[in-house]
Length: 191
Image (cartoon, rainbow, N blue to C red; front, side):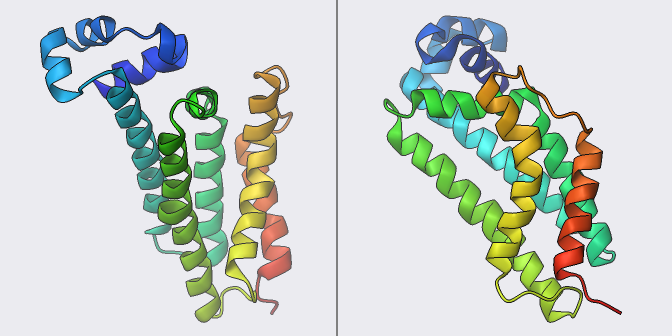
């Protein structure tokens, strides 16, 4: 049901989405939908929360694997680049930004969830890599921000700002590989 609601919200915006259409596409009655969500605002908040949880879960899975710092960072960077390059992900972000004035608390919760559940996790992984001697950096949060930025700018922000009219020339995999190469040149242990 949340997938159907997400698809409706991203295609039609908050104002254009009708609870009846979401219920029909989900194969439930409108009464059942209203029994789960008091109104469209509650459904919208649940959709955004679900997107944030999905995002965090996908990215955490990547770092749970074994391997060298370079291999783990590359796997993360590729997964992150593919995720952030997904047009659907941009639509969720556009939706959150467009509805922010009406749903300030939902937008702030979405941001805080990403920062605490995902950003903090990546910082912790980089810190652990430093403690194991795989990386050398004084400020893992700065290093994480630099890695994110090298990936986000071409695959996410450019298309987001231009309405998908300007897309990166390099493939997401190449952007990720270049980002990790630059990251390792800065923070990797020199032998």
